[in-house]
Image: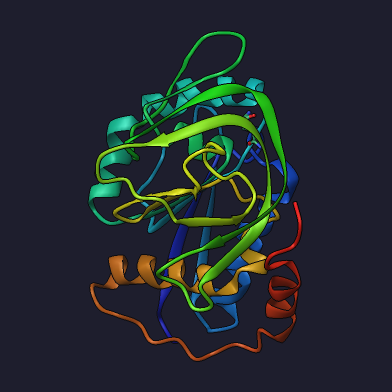
Length: 242
Ligand code: GLN
């Protein structure tokens, strides 16, 4: 795909990059390069200004790293909300997902203000959810997403923010309502580490297409890649016990 570019802003990877979340960036990069799409990567650190991108990624982290990042993200709240409204794609994993909401209240310590890209909030519970997760979506083919969760935060969605799908295995957002993740416009949050995208190539392509449609203003039809290995990994985890 000549002269097609995807620009990706990676938010605070030195602080939020738990359980190999960098694997999501590597997957986006390779799946673009295998199709001849230029992958323009921008690592954004504490104190850096944030430029416009087609796609923003933020990983997960312990409460302490979230505290270090939250105030920095908050300084860019209105710019990032404008980017959301311009149709940029956002993918936040776990701790990053929590900061996409209105706030994250850790078990101990100050409440962390989020950037309200999603109409959601998170409160730490007493129990830590750790284990495999399978989610049934209504927008992907195959319809499932697989990964693993490790969080004590309980996330509650409101308003027009909808879940990514129903838990088949695992606790997801809060272990009560039976849903995992959140989406509003092209902002996606999920508790699925793994890392997520290498084992869910169909979701990676879905997100890349959304970001390219935002940049170029028209749909893209992708040629299929040889995803035998990726889908073998995916299928081996579908329904895997917690
Ligand atoms: N610190 C948050 C929690 O425990 C997020 C953890 C994570 O990113 N895996 O819920």
